[in-house]
Length: 95
Length: 201
Image (cartoon, rainbow over the protein chains, first blue to last red):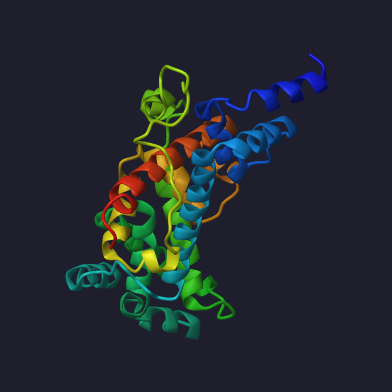
């Protein structure tokens, strides 16, 4: 199949299944997409609101985990050792 | 006995528990999501730190140094729980997510009405203020097979490169990408259902 024809087919077949394209949104966050993969994503997102939301949700999740990480660094701790746990640790270190 | 040795024997490591214990625990807990394992990891870290205290250079902050040791302990822990080379059936099985997409009709392969993503109108910093939301994150990660969750934390929290994580966990890049996709599909839906689709907070 010629290159032009492939492109035409993608454009006309705007309803490529979300299920088939969806792994690419995730892959893009962990590796470089190939040229054809990028094209598939681009054309699909042009017409699909649900997948566009999906991509923004993935970015949101990334931000949430990153922010949580920064909060730990800033000592905004949401999990702390109990007094008993501290005693246990101190005893271990003394022995 | 020389001066260095005297200093080591007199050093009281229990002070670390008060100064850095909570921080190290919060860090470990965010990765392993289990209080007991997190406490064990903190203990291993402090014991290892006592052993190698002489090699600690005051150039770096003590906490940074301890956290560096803890990070290694966490990876060791993941490595141990990831001994098998092959993906288990549960980890590799993408068909368990088929229910999120329509199986027939004109819209075959499109999101089902129930799983369809919508825009999340909240700000990550504000949403993390809610203890309930943080609980949902822990809960949703906990629903994933252990190795899938470990992949996700190493990537999204520690920011390791794909190749490094594949080496730690002894998996192929393809398996890694599939596991990440799986983790994200699940987490997105789980967070959506448990938080965003519920009444405004």
